[in-house]
Amino acid sequence: MKAAWYERNGTARDVLVVGELPTPRPAPGEVLVRVHFSGINPSDVKSRRGRPVPGPRVVPHSDGAGIIEAVGEGVPESRIGERVWLWNGQWKRAMGTAAEFIALPSEQAVGLPDGVDFAVGACLGIPGLTAMHAVNLLAPIKGKSVLVTGAASAVGHYVTQMAAARGARVIGTASAEKAGHARSAGATDIIDYKKADVAARVLELTNGNGVNAVIDMDFSTTARLLSAGILGAHGKYVCYGSNVPGDNAVPFGDLLFRSLTLQFFLVYELQPDDRAAAIADLDTMLRTGALDHTIGARFPLAEIVAAHEAVEAGQLVGNVVLDLVD
Image 1 (cartoon, rainbow, N blue to C red):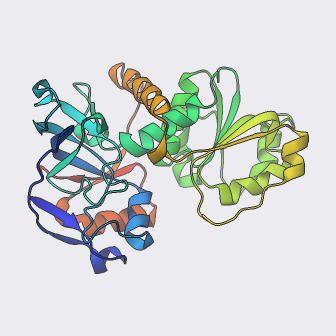
Image 2: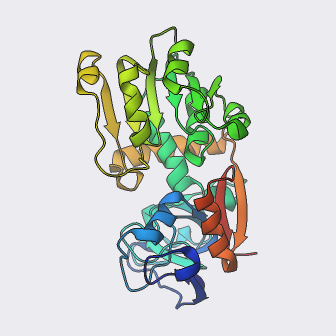
């Protein structure tokens, strides 16, 4: 099968290789999926750049979508031919979705509703599930004000739609160039984080009270705003990432005397019940056409280097995917 891989950490141009690898066979409890699209997320390029390599050869990417072509022992043959989207394809293992085929546990191949494009399916494993779980952690959310940082990002765009659909007032941060994208998702107010004083603007928009909740993509930046009062008393701060992964100080006094809740999660490690709930809620929105999806760019497998560089540049609006059937 055609596949892309790397054998050491480094820049995309230095380490990514495209060639032929043996087609895997599904082990007991697994399915073999013919990958139509592979999704590329910031975590994928971070792994290639500097995270420990989990094997002598790594086929990157955790997200993807395609059709089940074979099943291992214990998996119903009725799954053959099923359209699916994939999660945790390359989490704690070496074989991801940047290949024509992937074998993985049956439960990690989720039915993709008819009419939903495979390219969209390749955006659900990390962006879709991260967004849905973050919003679920705030339930009930109707009538609440929510600050969504990076509201025009892949995850933030989904968060904004999901929160707005549940009746929340969404205040989003986005650059001037991407503000329209965030607003189209349902954000009522956009703060240009590059030019505006984010904390002052949040207080202005909430009559000095701060928002009821924050869904944040960068703890290293946003945590510093807690002492400025962006999160109101008894509010909840949900975070799924940080640009600075090391230690970050939090204002203990502000958290204590305003009775704030901090909640962090890693989408790869969701508890089974939480993941099942997020998948079910995401499926409902997919089947009812309640979500808009943005594919920022599609690259063939042979151009995976350019695709990784596009993700790292951060200028595109929407998800970046590899087309493996073009």
